[in-house]
Image (cartoon, rainbow, N blue to C red; front, side, top):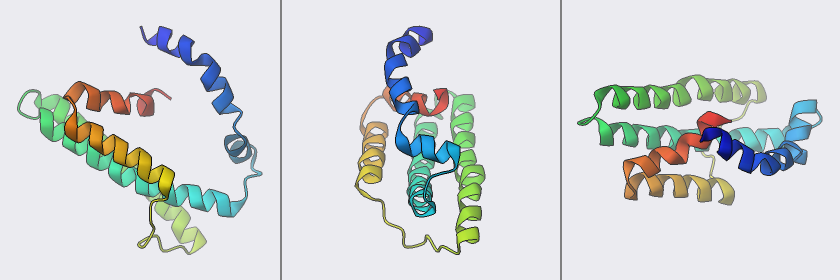
Amino acid sequence: MAQRFWDSAAHLIKVTEKHPFLVAMVDGTLDVENFQYYVIQDALYLTDFGDCLRRLGDNVSAIDNDASTRLHQFADGAEEAEKDLHRSFFKQWNIDDSNAVAMPNTLLYTSYMSRIVATRCHAEGLGEFMVQYTT
């Protein structure tokens, strides 16, 4: 079944892989200010990402302790390992991100993610994260 999803999305994946931002990031031609903006927004996203994973873990703790523990570990990984990378960039760039504000696209996505986890069934909440772990 997973292969069918990949196959049906192949054209979108190809278009996405050719997006100018991604191409410039990979080939090293992306303007530093654009990359800094991306890293700040990504750090804000990771905070909500970790929060949603924890909520999913809390929701399933009475049913499946192993799944709950694993979701909490994923949340910790997002906030520790991935945000450590972001903090290293902030230190290198001498940026204080403590007053960073989510821009509209970041806010739209994280709000949607949070709403799904808070209001829909557990399976739909997990489904929201599938794209994160399959790309």
